[in-house]
Length: 289
Image (tube, rainbow, N blue to C red; front, side, top):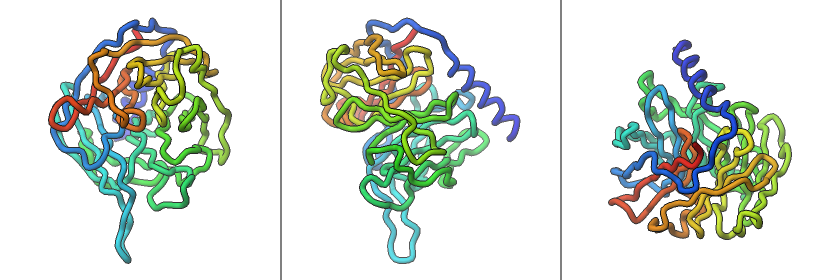
């Protein structure tokens, strides 16, 4: 198991240390994942583990509930797919997921829940948790707490992205252009990034309200979905706009794309396309070459 964790960490860190890349004028489809099992709630986000060659899709939107004397847990599930987009299985760790990512520093699949900041009051099973995996990458129903609630994350519905090099999170704040940089050792944000949306030709109501991706590419670190203009906007860690990649104009993005159904994994921005397929389809777009 120790050797497995070492291999996973090396693989992820190798992909994280990237230099400046070319922004593709038109985003290229890297993978399509048709959802073959009805989501328990809203399809929230996507993670990827190269060694297992699997994608993990987290649902979110159901608060943890429990009867008298029972442990409160959410019915939202996590689903595993192979690298061809074939459904494998699901698990129910019990969290209202907002972010899902592989952490090479801990060799764990981790989730950030709704209301990690307790912005709307205390709720059970809120924080950062690791989801247990079998030796072959299969999901288990068991999990472990990593961190409890932390007000530094700000808005209750934020979908933070993780930077394994700095061990920090980028938490997009709703109804605006602000991204809070969070270190879990602190109860206050490390700093605030103001995205230059005006230079990008967008306003805050055009773009993803809760999510911004971390690419790991120097000078092009922050990746933001512009829902209304069907484009992907790229910023550096100071919020400077550096370019855009156009999504297919035939895509039918909906209001919910402002709030969920996004993720950044395996060097791709994932966008949930609800009209396609019985339960919708996730597109993985390559935007950086």
